[in-house]
Structures are given as structure tokens and as C-alpha cells.
Image (cartoon, rainbow, N blue to C red):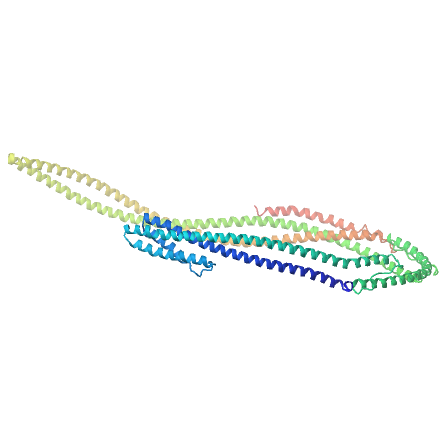
Length: 623
């Protein structure tokens, strides 16, 4: 039954079996993993319950420590710490999912009952006076805390024992699961390997037999029976096709023998035709050899019709006509190449002459442009200096005008000083008169004191001092009057000098205004000259660029004509390799270069004579 199934069906059966084994192994693994996950979940829940009990026991131990600290040093902060710990303990309810069994839940609820009693007792202790507070803590709080802590410690020990037992059971169960998975995997691998080997044999054995049959058919062995032709799968189809192929090979062998007989007769006819073709080929080879050497006068000869093929006559006529046509074309091409060479030589000579003139003109323009650039720069610099001079003259004019104002103010001040000096002189005269009167009064007072005798001695001393002061004041007044008189003379001289200085400054201001106007005119003219020279310089630069471009184009034309002449010479060299039927063509290659050389000799002189003129023209702007 299996040999009648197709190869694709067998492969599908093999794949389906392996997939089934993998599915069974995967299902087994999933079930075992679920069981292991349940064990781990139980262990984790038991561990959470143990951690909850441990936390409560730790809170009660912290309460006892905080209780002792509060007893040693009562205070609001330590009381708040105890209250916070009690709130953490009382926050656990009986419905907490971490409490898995009733005994543990009852133990936790009993601890919370003690915690509530502890909280009430602690609040009473806080409100009580210090002597009574210590008694409440020692007699009531401490026993409550110890009972709750001992109960939770015992409950924690029971939870730890239960957790350890469950952990041991879980480990044993995991070991059993691992063994089961290994066994299931090994069984699946062995089953899959056996199934794969069986299917491989079912697929490979017919293919091996078929390969042997193909090798014997390829060796033209017709004395064996091809196996597996009765199978209804792909191997049977190939075996039946191979049997049909072997029969076809036998028919082909018979047909090959028949073709060999026919080929013998055809070969004899082919040899006769080959002899005729060989004769025509030898004739064509000789003619083509001469043609390859450049002999265009060669022609195909006429041969006996029995020794050459029928198409030889048509080939001979076409070939001779084509060679004659090529002979004529090559002759015309040689004449055209000579004409092109002569024209290119003349163009090159003209381009060289024009290039020399253009280069000389470009050099002259370049020197003229350089000189004009220097002149433009000089004019611009002069314009800038004139502008600066104009600015300086304007500033000097303003300074002179301000100096005139200062001189006028100085004259006015000198006049005021002279007036003040006259007033001071009058005041000094009054002071001198007062000193003179005081001296007379002091003299009279001294006379009267002398008359008074002893009673007037003190008054006589005072009168003597007053007289002395009056004399000193009179002398000082005379000195001041002399000084003021001398100052008045100097002031008069200063007024005269300042007046003359003002007159001179006014004349200077007028001259400075005239100079400023002249400098402004010069600056404006220099600016206009600089602008005009700039425009001329731009035009010269543009003309210089155009001349340089013309020179470049002339050089390109000269290079192109030289290249064209070289190409024409190469073309003549190539064409000269052919021997044509036109007479006198090979003797026309030498005279072509003579006129060019003569024209070059004639054109060389103007370039040398133009060079000094260009040099002198280039030096003129610089001077």
C-alpha cells in the first residue's frame, strides 16, 4: 500500500508524524509546566503569609523597644512613633488574601486584639501623670506586648515549618516532572527517528533502483527489465517513461545507420563541389592579396566554366566594377586631401600672423591699462587728499572765526578791566585822603593827650598807633595806586594788541574762506577726473579682455589648422599606399608645402617689426 502513495504524500505523512510527536511532547510539557506553576503559586502564597507574620512580629518587637525608650524619655515624637507602628499592625484585616488558613488568621486576629488593647492602654499612660504612667507601662503595656510578640513568634515558627515542608514537596515534585519530561522527550525522539528512517527507506530504495536503470539505459543496455514499472507513484511513472525512452533510443540507432549510408553519397558530391570552390578561392585569394597590398589595378580573370562554380561570372563582374569604383574614389580622395592640406597650411599661417598681432596688441593694452590704473589710483588719491585738505581748511576757518570771537571778547574784557582800574584808582584816592585825615586826627589827639599829662598817656599811645597805621595805609594806597596805574598802561597796550590781533584774524578768516572755496573747486574737479578715469579704465579693461579672448580664439584656430594639416598629411600618407590607374597622381605631394613656407617667411618679418613699436607704445603711458 505504501509504494502506491506519491512522494509528496509520503513527505506529508512523515511531516505529519513528526508534528504529531512534537504536539504530544508540547502538550506534555505544557501540562507539567502548569502543575509546576501551581506548586510555585502555592509556595509563593505560603511565603507571603510567612512574611506577613514576620512583619507583625517585627512590629511588636519594635513596639517593645519604643516602649522602653518612651519610658526613659517621654515625648510627643516617640509617642507618635508608637502610634504609627500600631496603625501598621491594625491595618491588616481578616479578609487579607495573604492569610490562607484559619489557624493563622485566628492568630493574627488575636494579635490585633492585643494591639487594640495595647493602644488604649498606651493612650491612658500618655494622659496619666508621670508616676502613674510608669506603673501603667510596666504593669499593663509590657505584658500585653510580650504576649502578642510571643504568640506571633510561635505562629511565625509554625508558618516557617509549613513553608519548609511545602518547599521540600515542591522540589520533589519538580524532580519528578523533570524526569517525566526527559522520558517523554527521549521516547518522542526515538519514535520520530525510527519513523523518519522507515520513511527514508521507503523513499530512497526505489530511487536507487531507478538510478541504476538510468545508468544501464545510458550505456545502451537493452537486455534487462526496468523494475518498478507497476508502481502508481512518481517512481513508477519515471520507470515507465524510462522504458519508452529506451525504445526511442533503439529507433534512433536504426535511423543513424540509415543516415550514414546517405551521408556517404552526399560526401562524394561535396568533394566535387569543393574542388570547384577551391579553384575559385585560389583565384580570389591571389587577387585579394594584391588588393590588400594597395594595388587597385588588379582585376579577376575569366576562367573555364567547368572548373569554377556558376556564380563566379557574377562575382567577377561585381568585383571588377567595385575595384574600379574604389580606384576612382581613392584618386579623388588623394586630390581632395592635397587641397585640404594646402588650405590648412594657409589658414595656419594666417592664424599665426594674426596671433602675433593680437598678442602685441594685447601686450600694449595691458601696459596701457596698468599705466591707466596707476594714474586712476593717483587721481583718486589726490582727490582724497584734496577732500581732506578741504575738510582741514574748513576746520581752520571755523577755528579762526572762533578765535575772532575770543579776541572780541578779550577786547571787551580789557575795556571792562580798564574801567574797573579807574574805579579802583578813585577808591584808592579816597582811601589815601582818609589816611591823611586819620593821620591829622591822630596828630591832634597826641597833642591833646600831651596837654592832658598823666591822664592822657594811654590815649597818646593809642593816637600814636593810629597815626602809624594811617601812615602805613597811606603808603600802601600810594603803592597800589602806582601798580594800578602801571596795570592800566599794560591794559591799554593789551587792548591795542588784541584789537590789532582781531583785525589780523578777520583778514585770516577772509583768506581761509577764499582758500576753502578754491580747495572745494579743486576737490570737485579731482572727483570728476577720477570718475572719468575710472570709466576709461573700465573700457580699457573690457577692450583688453576682448583682445585676450581674440588671441585665445586665434590660438585655437591656429591649433585647429595645424591639427587639420597633420590629419590631411596622414590621410595623404594612407592614400599614397594605394596604386591607382590614374597617371601622375603620386608626383603632386611635394609642391603643396612650398607656398606655405614662402608665405610663412614673408609673414615672419612684420611680427618682428611690430615688436619694438609695441614695446615703445607700452612705455608711453608710464612716462
